[in-house]
Image (cartoon, rainbow, N blue to C red; front, side):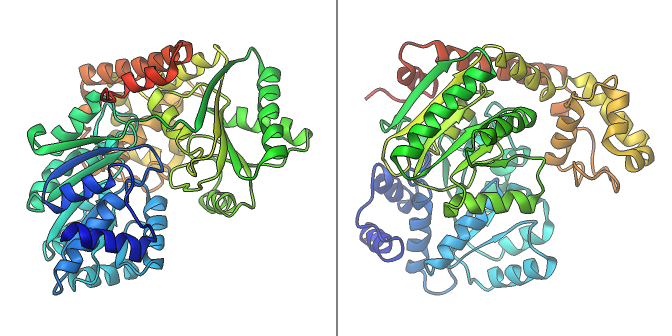
Length: 480
């Protein structure tokens, strides 16, 4: 009966006449009260695997709707998903830091009254006592953990607040739980369950594999910037002459992106640029133009792409070597979501590995550096407020302007909830001790080694005779 209702909801709200892949099996598992870990390629329809059960649960309880709580790491992504659900007539909302206090309070009151069946939040929201109080008034029937690889410190996008989700699950009464991701190695899969405090025997793994046969995976070895440009232009010109759609070219460094922007502009190739030095409004405008098709080619750092749900991306070029197979696979996963052919080309210059090794060093400051940074933040707070990050860098990095270790420490302190704003230190307040994960030399060394191994795995992929087979082995895809 419940699966018949699920099929009816699929057709009524989403316009599909049947489930695809493992969606039906996953949804049935959830509706029967079982926990699940779903690994499905980007664009495969993961969200329906918790959205449909949420609506089924709401339909079966006509009084106060049971609540499906969706944990998502990105504010922009959750807004896009909620906007789409609301446009389909579904009672969904989100709570995050983008809301004004009055807006947030209105939504809290509506949640208390039982007006929503789907609520999207970031894991950091659980730091707020008033939010936990609101949730205590609702029956959370389903917990959906999106981008679940963020739970694992050994994943490629660790979020410390995700690691509290096991404790949060217990506070919510251990609801049915579904964890979803496009990329997770076997070690990360195990860590996801451990962090959620789920017993492996109680969780069913649904692994749809990673093969998308419409993607043409290629590596082209290049020796300098001129050869990179030639390869780019060949792909761009072939695309422009033969098909609709759009393309993304990924860069590691902003200065390299800007260099190639000038090169392409000189060839009269129209494009836009997206990177972290742009203000939030500019980034949003560029993403909106890309989604509407006004901008068909974007040169971007890896900050671009999360939440970009455009189905006719015809090519993804990596102009530089990415930092890991996980990030590489996630980025190429944005191509060809319509099922039509798409090119995924990695332009391999061996010298780019030096840049990535430097990035790994910057993103893994050792315990001694973290302790020194902490000492300055806590004992020289007034100077930090007055002179900011440059003052810190001068004292910690021997005036090396490109050293980004202090940015990493501030980012991690922000993620652990110890400081409020990693970018604006003018009102710096310290709200806790130095996290153990930053003070422990063994943990810091293990994290460094893990990142180095991931980069080495990418190099092995580049030199592999059968790259698809290598990806399947790396991500632990079960043999059929």
